[in-house]
Length: 340
Image (cartoon, rainbow, N blue to C red; front, top):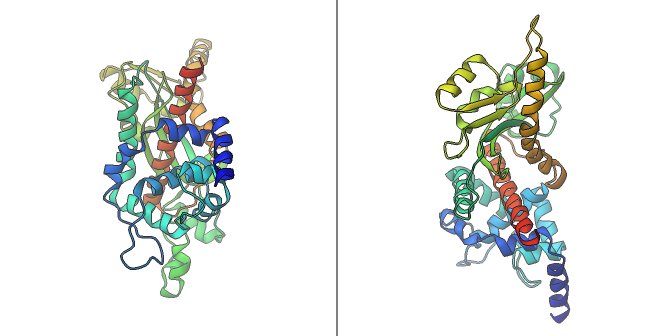
């Protein structure tokens, strides 16, 4: 045990992200929300106590920090001292298995807790002085799901929002369970994508995600703009790329008191003027801050691939991913305050 203690101390000296999360995040702020979940360990003895909800929640944090499958989370916790330390588990302690983690996340989905968890942490950082200010930036990113080996006819049906008749037959029910029929196709840059979209609104000052919405990939960015606007932001400016541009949107936002900084878009036979191009360039200097959010997902949080099936699970998983991004961003800002 003395050797294990020394190894723990070496991990802490390096101040890795997991150590800082344990030091800086008051995990008990989530306990009351998660307290409605009661998950007993798989194959447990009669009367065995349920798993601690904070332990299970922190396993989900690990999962979203590194974009791991349930099975990979279980394996990595057993294999890595840093993961065990983060969860405050000793060598002799039982690690919840992949099925238990899946059940816990399913309970979060069924009760819709991911949104409450997200908002609870935002309330916490606001109390610490990270209130949204200086305006907000809107954007969306495509979330791919695992590629499916479908026939041309099956893909055609899916693009039309229909479930292929063959999949609905009783003998194919297992096949249907493995097919995501709620994801949708969309095109970006001439490339077709199948999956979902994570729409976010961040504050310009700290780059925290303040609002989000999850839809299938075919939903146009501008359709959810109302759900992303943060009325608590002290600034009036709203930045967004040309996908959000429409005269009606600009007019409505202006009437609501917003200072609209949405990129103007060229139309057929009506190219942008030099002045419009210059204005867009200036707007880009601010709007680009939102790209750092999705860049963090790709470069530091294991990418955007979604392993779950269906829109409701997508909402849960992406809601948790947005929360974990904010946890990570908070650690970054707090560390800058200490070292700066």
